[in-house]
Image (tube, rainbow, N blue to C red):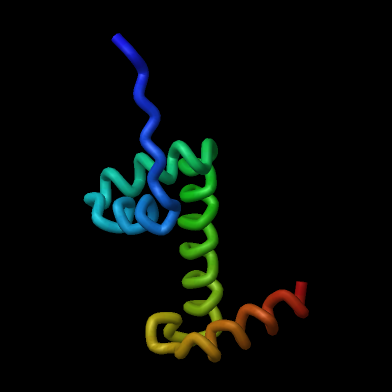
Length: 80
């Protein structure tokens, strides 16, 4: 059986990936980012940690705007 190579423009590939199910998108990411599970664990830890720091300071992370969140993170980094 002969091998066939199909050339698909990158924008079309990107659009096809956008149409995948969440599970399919995750599978693509796992191929592109070999350590995706470790990265996700780090993101989850960071998310938990920032929320804990907010609770200690009496701040509700969920109600902060994106600008307020960035300012808080900048403040925390300067304290470190």
